[in-house]
Amino acid sequence: MPIISEIAEAQDELKAIRRDIHAHPELCYEEARTAELVASKLESWDIEVTRGLGKTGVVGVLRKGTSKRAVGLRADMDALPIPELNTFAHASKHANKMHACGHDGHTAMLLGAARYLATHRDFDGTVVFIFQPAEEGGGGAKAMIDDGLFQQFPVDAVFALHNWPGMAAGSFGARVGATQASSNEFEIRIEGVGAHAAIPHDGVDPVFTALQIGTGLQSIVTRNKRPIDAAVLSITKMEAGHAVNAIPTTATLAGTVRTFSVEVLDLIETRMKEIVTATAAAYRCKADVNFVRNYPPTVNTEAETQFALGVMQDVAGVDHVNTNIDPTMGAEDFSYMLLERPGCYGYIGNGQGAHREHGHGIGPCMLHNSSYDFNDEVLPLGSTYWVRLVQKFLAPA
Image 1 (cartoon, rainbow, N blue to C red):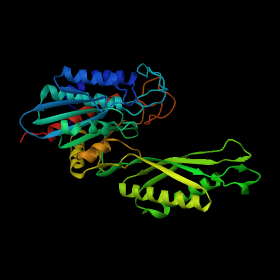
Image 2: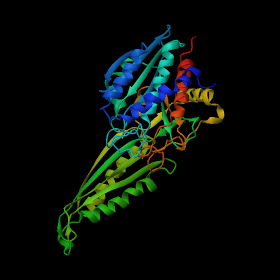
Image 3: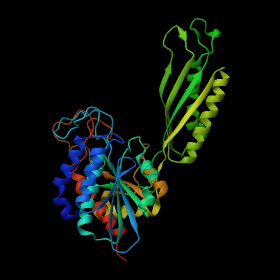
Image 4: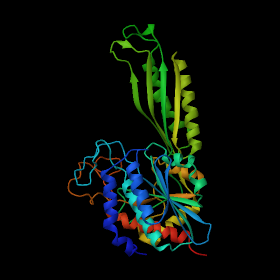
């Protein structure tokens, strides 16, 4: 099933929208300009619009026919707090703000689908277009849910699509089950007794204790969880002392934990606290752990994922769809929506980076990289996927 010709003919307009958003990046919960652009476009196509859900989120609703079936389609809108190295015409106009994850493309693809569906309305039911703020660490999906997203706009299933660099343009992928990990962070504060470094027996050394704790924590991954259960425990920050000849009073360790299941996460948190407390006591220190759970794992439901994969195959062909794409230890707050409704978080190939124009920065075209840029060539493909998904999900009885 080829790209819809009407959408293909609108590629230049979709590209202009995408590049305009790219040039004006806005960080989480600051997406006022982007949200207004989205809302204005939807209203111009006679789509019912609700602004301000989850602070800066936008929801568009399109109804046709008598069916009570409804489907939610989500795109994220926020940028990242990193500088852009690219110098092409649509590069960021704001220092230390950049669309380095392709949310500009996600928004443009969903807008392209919204316009087509509003024009043709060849479905029976309700389409809910969800333009979400603050995916990059702000929990915008949860904020929209807490504001009553699924109470005001009930759906039978919800779907999202993320671009994936290194995956061939023209291809898709998804998997049943966990596709992205939970994101969690911890801080361990160790308290000892300061002393002169030449007289260590007069003190209680929190630095030495921190080193033992750091080593001990790795036993959780290697000796406490099942080897087949993937997990990452990374200590990424250590702070202690200011002078080379003084044992400090305190030391701090901090880092991240990633898992594909809540059960493994529970195990890691429990064992971490046990090891920290016992190790600190063994070396006569006191210690406490602040463990913060950010995003839960993103877990695709089977029926909805198989459905989405079928649509992808219809659009791109069987040979261009990976039906069991590798999971990633990255995190995604679409996970909150999947806790509320069944659905699928899928991927669209962004290519190897050859699409970047002259003036791209030094570095690979990877997510969260200062030289990244979304591949405009896949905009019509992504919009077509959304349209075909709606037509199939809301097919007249």
